[in-house]
Image (cartoon, rainbow, N blue to C red; front, side, top):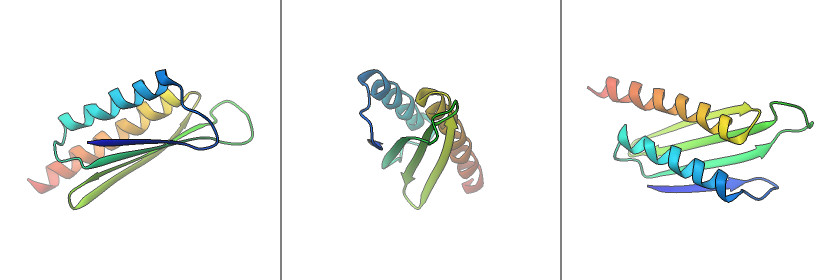
Length: 97
């Protein structure tokens, strides 16, 4: 699986990048046909709490899963977005059975 992290107007720390790669790669346990995952990170203006936004798009053959979440930290936003994508993948697998 190819994981692409795209920060908007800032540089991703190594710790954040490791966190994202570790969490996103766990999706392969749910679906081993994942082609790639795009993670877009941005800071929402104005500067308040809950201003870290994460958009995650996961592509599999014949389908695409998307989630966008905003939280206090990028780690938290990524984690909640991945939970939403896990639900979508699980639901998709149940439908195909």
